[in-house]
Amino acid sequence: MDKRELLMQAKKDMQLWIDQMTLGNIEETLEQIRHYENFLSQMTYLQVPTMETTASENENEEVEFESVKEEIPKYRLERQLRGGFIKELNAYVPEGAIRSIGAEDGDYVYAKHKGSGHFYYELAEKGSPINTERKEVQFGIVEQSGDLFMVSRSLMNGGQNTKINGVLHTFLLSREDVLELKLEDGDVVDLAFYENKPSTVRVVWKHDTDEKGYQAPLKSGYYKDSNGTKEKFVDPLLENKNVLVLGLEPRKAEYKQAIEQHGGTFDWVEGTEGEERLERKIAKADVVIILIKYIRHHASQFTVKTCKEHQVAYSIVDTFGVQTVVDAAVTPQVQPASELEI
Image (cartoon, rainbow, N blue to C red; front, side, top):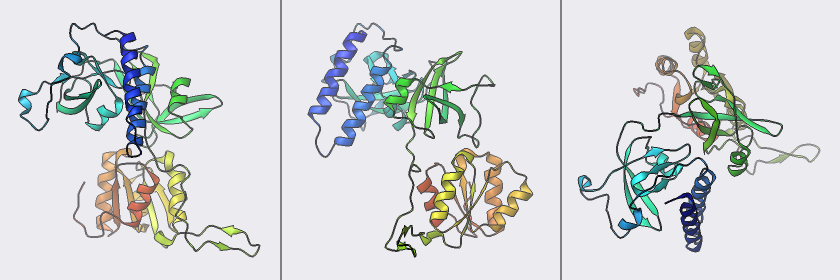
């Protein structure tokens, strides 16, 4: 199947999804259309092998994943910059499908045909990488400068600079990706590029965050000042609580705003401070939020140990959403004297 045939098939598939759209599956349909948009946008980079057989020969075979899996064919996934490809099926695998099953380059997957060139995928077993030239930057922070959009930092380890082979590098994002994903300053994205060819960089995933335009819930406590002007009610969920957030400096301002809107007092540390200073901060806190993915392991271990010693409640959070952090502060996962370890 050449690129022209792939284009024709993609057009037919998108039309089929649109024809079958109902009020109950609008979101699913839009998500599928976005996958095809991503596929079409990268066809320039896609190398399509010539095959003697196509997936259509097996379209009438029904395979249930619940049956004996030794009898189900396994297909090796080859990562493209965005999404992946299964040669035996001539099938493009959307980025979302790969992430939903936790697959990586070179892994083996089960594929169940669901009609019109679509497949359900399930991870079969881990494999060795095929496309070793593909590199990723995870949790990159989008920065805007005039009409240009770029990534020079990642949320990992508290906002570290992006590098290629140990050398600092700023990735300039294509106008195509900016428009397609509606990127804005402060968005968090994953990038992929071919080693030694950073100009091939593509935005492969835009992380869904809940911090944009964050407002504390407004209640009937909205009141008027002496001039009759409405002022916002401060939600008292965290009233008189000192909330210490550990890690993720690039989101510090958003966390501070949210905690204070809920009546709390905000404090923050990077996690690279000396143990004495970190211990003093923890001892003053009523609850500690540990952003586990974005700090060093030693810092997280020390924080948990110190929280227990000082009888301070804490939550371990593995995402960066503002509402998640607020919820973790309002209802800590671990109360004083808990034996939970990380």
